[in-house]
Amino acid sequence: MDSETQREFDIVVYGATGFTGALVAEYLHEAHGDTKWAIAGRSQNKLDEVKRRLAAPDLPTLVADSDSREDMTRLAAQSRVIISTVGPYARHGTTLLEACAAEGTHYCDLTGEPQWMASVFERVSDAAEESGARLIHCCGFDSIPSDLGVFVAQKTMMEKHGLYASSVSGRMGQSKGAVSGGTVASMLVAMEQGISDPVARKALNDPYSLYPAELEPGQDGPDQRGAQWDDSFQSWTGPFVMAAINSKVVRRSNALASLIYGADFSYNEAMLLPSRRAALLLAGGSMLGMAA
Image 1: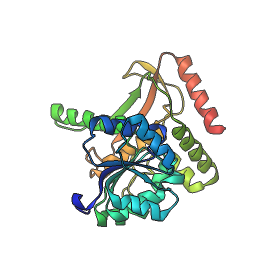
Image 2 (image 1 turned 180 degrees about the vertical axis):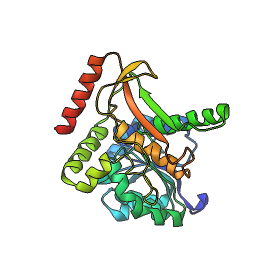
Image 3 (image 1 turned 45 degrees about the vertical axis):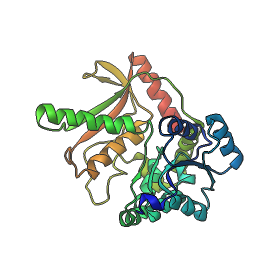
């Protein structure tokens, strides 16, 4: 990767005019204002509006279209790191990812689309290894809490007991907030591809679709879809909507760390619910959603 002095910016936030991108820009402005950074998107007018809301008139802006290979290459070449919040990534993310891999630009995104990730790994792996680019997916609610949660739990397990747990369960309680329009769009694209494309359908349903191809899959089956009683948590549980991506990411992290938790390491996620009825309702709603 080029030295820092050869790049105009340390960080570029691509998609800064969207809901999540604007939050990222706000955080960088407030917490890391001395960093050399810029915002990027397709519309200069919308980028100017972000600058106005941030009260940052001198913040550099870059206009770039995700469908243009020339634009994405230029964007990647200008920055040490690209933060992409432009989804659905299956439609808008591949060209930028390939540009970052080729230009040696570190990259992170918020995707929760395993079918897209599985399709691009082989396309960018060699270029990224040669250029030194670090490409990191799923840096949002899916799947940071799950991935780092397992890491911290296993680190504590090793420190206290001298070994790693062979199985970890993630349980989600009540939470506040709502999904963004981009998240909904990504979910709809995943459903559409799962119906029309057998390869995408396999990636969505296979618990080990994000596993390196050279490794044998472990023992985990499909994510929980029904209502189950959990003795460990003394609670009814139902399917957790993010488990479909979170569990795959946790398994991939274990694989990329040379199977540090063991080749047979098992991980599962579910939603904690107050009653059997609530668990059945959630399970039924999830099944109807998948059938729709």
